[in-house]
Every structure is written in structure tokens, then in C-alpha cells.
Length: 489
Image (cartoon, rainbow, N blue to C red; front, side, top):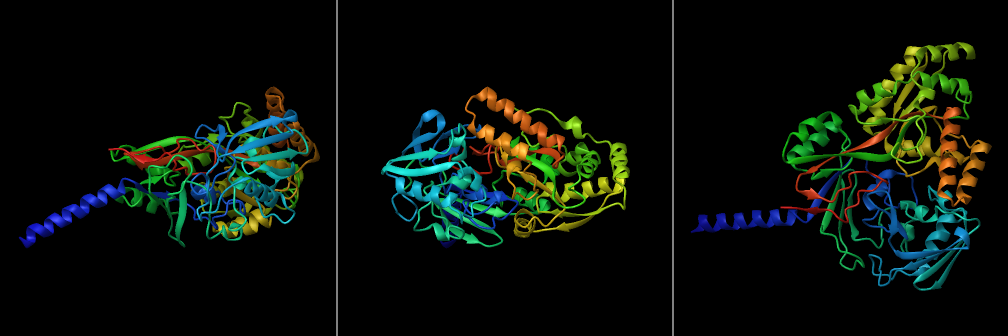
């Protein structure tokens, strides 16, 4: 009797556990976010956790890259793109119960564009002249010039809506309006979210989500095989994808990203302030060797800072093609002692593996490097914020971000006046054909100036339990959007 009862209880417990597992998910991530405030930092890992899950903006990016409504259910465009009137969803609350209304939009946008703003994409808000709450459900945004791209700008993680009462603590206690609320952050291990009962929109199928941080490729593979992780949307061990694809427990999801992977160069520091030196470095780099050696063949070569899947892309790879003889000739023309350059490598696999290959390629033409492997927080502080580097390998995953080359304080320090003028013209242009032509000119200009070495477009190689549906195939932005994710039988 005792034995039978015990067996029955155990069987019930296992059944209950299996049932519970079908509305929860554990997602693997390579990098741990330095903080959880997408409006106060540049780390892609922050958006990977909180975008669309915890925080929402006026607009949002869909899985196909299109811009659609979010907290603004619709908007009107007036004065040829100089005024936007946003109509807000009603009955929305933040996770602490505070009501969301037009005043929160005014606070959020004014905070983002303030002189003391710490928003990493402050440029998104620079064109705003005023923000006015017409009534609790209507906001009028007046720009200083027409901007046909403004709804796109409002879809960024940097533009999500926040409440003044909780804004100061978002880094460690994120409070948004999204379908999931923040539960717990186990530093160095994981972040836990749970479904928000008071969510105003369509409820998610999942009741909880755990993001686990696993940077080591071998550990990532082991976690998938053991079932410790249900999905790894940006899987860091492409060398094992063939093995996982052959296992019926898993599905491999290969798509594209907005991630232009570059060998960034500090354009203001000698010897990299010399275009011939930058050109010599570019011709020393064999892109395909890096794609094969670091990414196991996953990646598309690029010759400028633009995504190949974008209809306005132009292929400029031949302009900086691998040509070690041309590289050595340029170095001889420059003269002097061969330089030794500092190469800072952040944690992602593409950077660490790719950086070693790049160092060997540069050595082959006479350029030595000193490699420093940096943790993510150190890279952000030293390289991205401090500009204290010569070379670094990084993937820029923000969508349509060629405008970063117009920022005089951006870490690779380009901001050529002609390019700044080009971006100003793009901002004021509404006509799609004219915008397309300006984007092509922008790609050509930074390729002509060899601002950086443009390596490859980062592929999205994901792995998931075969019973999971709703994960994004492509990455039009940096998020792991769980709003449509569900388990199937």
C-alpha cells in the first residue's frame, strides 16, 4: 500500500512538472546585461531580455522588420512629417500598478533628449522640438524638421516608455508596461521574468521565462543536449549545429540579423588617422577566412556598414578586397617602423575567434597587435565610452544605424562634415526613392574613406527544442521577443 501510494504521488509530481514546463521557457544568452535599463545603456544584451517583454515603446519592430503600433495604437502625420500625433492605448498600467498615459510619454521623451541624458541613442531624439500631452490618450510631437523615419526611431529599445516614479531604478528593477514583469536577477547566472496579470494587450502563452547566461560555446552545447536550456536564439557554437540539426529533439533556426560585424578603427589616433594605414589594414583582411574560421561558414561578407538584406544595399566588398600585396605596398609608402596596434576583444565568439584570425592576417603583412580580451562591461567603459583603443571587433546590431558615422563623439571618431551633411539631408527627406539614393551615397562614402574594416553580416543561428514555436527566425533588432512563443504537443 505504502509503495503503491508513493509511486502514484511521484507519478503525479512528474506529470505536474511536465505540464508546468510547457508554459515556461529557459533561454540561453551569451552575454549578461550590464543593467536592465534600455534607455540608459548601449548593451545589446539589455534589449535581448527586456525589449517587447518588459518594456514597450510607442511603436515596435515586428519579426519581418516592419514598424507597427505598440503603446500608440495609431498616429497621424501632419505638416509634411514635422508633426506626429500619437493615439495611445487605454487601460495600460505599469507593472507596479501605475497608470500609463500621455504624461509618461512627455516624461520619457523629454528625459531622453535632456542635456544630462545618458541614453546611448540620444541622437534619436535630437530632432524633437516639443512634446505635448493633448489629453491623457493623445500626444503631439513637433519636430524641428520633417522626419519620415520618426516612427522607426520610436521603435528602438532606447525609446521605450517609462514612468517617472520608477525611472531612477530601472537598471536593477525594470518596471515597464509589457506582458512580462521582472522577478529576479541572479548575478552571473540568470534573469527571471513572469507573465504580468494586468497586461493590457494579448496575453502571452508563457507564464515565466528564465534567461541563462552561458558564454562558453562548449557549455552552451552541453546545456542544450542536457535540456537545461530550451532555446538559444543566438547560439555561440556554430561548429555543433550539424550535430544538433540531426537530433530530432531540436530544430536549428538560421536567419539574418542587423549585425554589421566590423574591425573598428580609432580614426583620430596615429597611425590610424592616416587613410592609407586604414586601407592597408583593410586589404590585409581575408573576410571569408574569418567567416569560415570563426563562424564556421555562417555570415555574409560586407564592404560597408549596411545589411545585405536591405533593398538599399550596394555591394562594395571588392573595394576593400583581400590583397596583401597592396597592403604591403601601402605600408611601404607610409614608411617608418611597422606599427603595433592594441586589439581589444569583447566576449562574443565572433570577436574572440575572429580577433585571433585578424591578428594573424595583420602579422602576415607586417602589422603586429597586442590582444586584450575584455569582459563586456570593461569593453563598454574603455572602448565604447572612453575611446581608448586602436582596433576592436564588434557587431553593430542596431537596425539601419549608418547614421552613427555622423556622430562626432562616437567611439571610432569619424564624423566627416560631408557625411554629417548627408545624414542631415536624409533626415529631412520623406520621398522613399530619394532616401534610397542618399543611403547608397552614405555607404559609398564610408567605404571610400576606409573608416572601418567591414567584415561580415552576422548570421542568426539559433537552436530550440523542436516543440517550441514563435521564436524569431531573423533579428530585425536585438530582442528575444517572447510574446508569441508557445510550446506545441
